[in-house]
Length: 476
Image: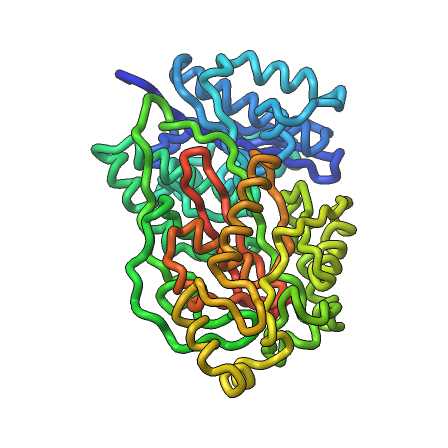
């Protein structure tokens, strides 16, 4: 294999009982074609899930070393524990894990191995091998490779350097990072794979357990979609209307951009800081579509809003990626944030910069009532981000300066972490708009339902990966 050799290793392990009958599976893949280069699986007797996962990692690394001892290896696993411990970000405390981690670390030089978390549904090949090994052990036999099942995995055209983005928000950015790395490698077959992945990145919908996060678009700062002219006035719930840019859910067509590439996997941007953006649950004003900012009555969550907060707390707990919870000072956000934080075992930090804009004399009014009472002021507000609501409200331009400064401060304080920001319609829209490099009028083309989730992953090169969800009917 002339030149730089690259492999993807996917590994998994399982235990039917934890501890119980256990086995592991590992596969070495060509990162460009998705071809299966080697498979390993073994029934290991009674063990825990974590032991089996580490055994799978060791087997996968050894298989890669047998193919090429100087290869650059990207290890992809759905075990957050193993990925974080082997990446050096989590301490290894369990006595059963320490020798396994030490063994894995000695198989290849540290400089040749990188680790990436992937959701379980994208680790099906290794998971299947682990289950085959456990099934064989149940029959009193050891696993033997099956050409037919291996062919099924290979024929699925799994371009593993560029998987469709999916997964939890803390790790959702992995797909976009892989797209950038593939684009950076450029040329030949790899360039074609990267282009296909870049197309998927703009349109793929996550399914199953990933339905909390929908389409992904990636743009470099300043690369804004072409303005399509101002759309009709928004519904009045604190400037909600339409959808992003094209008027269809997640419909922006975006092109992934890449910095200049170096050797290996492309530029190492490190772990992005990911802001999971949660709009608060419903208040009594929400279904009435009344302006509700920071200058009004500061309403509490309604019964429906409390149910939404509880449901989204369960959903985020199932993902297990949020490390910090930060809330707007307004009551509806603090109540939503506390519901999530209680479920996750975290504290809530209040951030003044995440408050909703002050809608001045429009507070508590519907859009129709504002249009009737303050038609000229409303039209000016719709026409220019510099215009403020009647009676000393805050303009979108002023809010953008405030929210930008808040974003930068939080990014500096939480580099590489996944942070839940519980806030309001306008701050979420502004953060998304800035990440996409979209024009100010795009604020009137987005709709965020109560308790909806979005996520923005911020990379060291200035790029941002944005994920959106607006359908929250399942949270009621």
